[in-house]
Length: 205
Image (cartoon, rainbow, N blue to C red):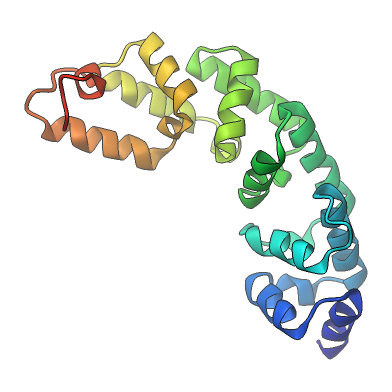
């Protein structure tokens, strides 16, 4: 363990940074350091940190995905680069996607998931990419989740076109938390006969 800490210090991390890294990603000590070092270099390259140790540490600490340092650096680079290129993300969207751990998705699987999301929402693949850019965790949901949420929105009385518009404008409707809130509001509002009443200007509940 001491040799790993010494290696991280040699890489440029301070003791405080190392403590934070180990607390969030303890596997940085369990992995072969060459693998950990290569992964840090990949992160530097992906986010154009220009060898800024604090910037690299911030990127690593922003990622809540488990087992980050057990992943193959080359595989992670390939998957995450493909995600960013395929969806044409900007810097802010890239960091959001990184935090959500989308680097676990192989390119072919990402393409399949985008096709499925498009089918479930009744939109084009290009529009599905827009949904995932705004809410990257949609790409790592179980394949049936988005379709189930669409059915639940229909159950509240929203039409297919309304569901499509809602999810394109606010992809969080694909997320169970917002959907549960919407359902709770609908069932507690005496003036709502359909989901559209809830969304309309005639209902402030």
